[in-house]
Image 1: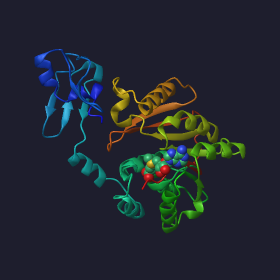
Image 2: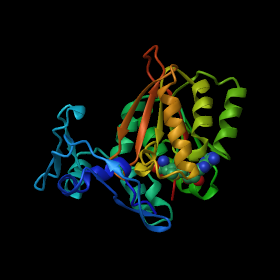
Image 3: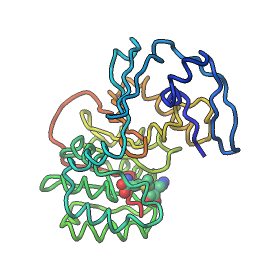
Length: 296
Ligand SMILES: C[S@@+](CC[C@H](N)C(=O)[O-])C[C@H]1O[C@@H](n2cnc3c(N)ncnc32)[C@H](O)[C@@H]1O
């Protein structure tokens, strides 16, 4: 269980923390129950925050934030955001059909799908709600490779590709994504993809990334889901193997000169994604690949 927040904890009740002590021991919910974490040292300036209960905006006077407002996304704001997402009818139907299915919480949210589609805007790999979203924006003649190891998920996804009239564009690959990507490279498909979306095994992110770097052309885009892993990556007390893998992956990306990166906070599920683009040409995307998959 992860009620633990690390850095985020600072915003929970800064005023109380400020008036009581500069150092205090926040209570952290862990898998073993209530524990007392190591003391967190608060920056005095950062604690001069005002929690605006009307707008749920926290205004920081800390110079290190550049006096930027830190907004907490509440249901009202998220409802507003969703009301301003252009979600195609077929995606809404898929989302509603799969909402009560096991694992549906892993499906990307409509706003994230829109962001990824804009990043793709024409690109070759993807699947599920997210893959259907990409297939819908691929231009005439575009191609999408959807990697999934679960036949049942593929069955639902394929039904929706059919209904949306995009089956021609989608090549479905049942099996482990890394194996599929390797065989695509062996088939001479290197540098021929414009866009990739990754939302599969967290411990494999570095491997997927290396394989996709070979498949995606210079100037292409790779979107990787869950890089904040529900905030766990920022908590030094959380060190399970998935969190450590993602944390290491993020650090490696920071030092990777082959790509430019951008981390975006997702509004739902406090995950985020990284968009990595290799520098270079800017030609239109025609091919996409998805190492994610439909989750039902
Ligand atoms: C988090 S869900 C993806 C949800 C998807 N992005 C969506 O919006 O519908 C992860 C999916 O990846 C599939 N998956 C996990 N590991 C895989 C692997 N090694 N190879 C292929 N598919 C995998 C799972 O079966 C599951 O359908």
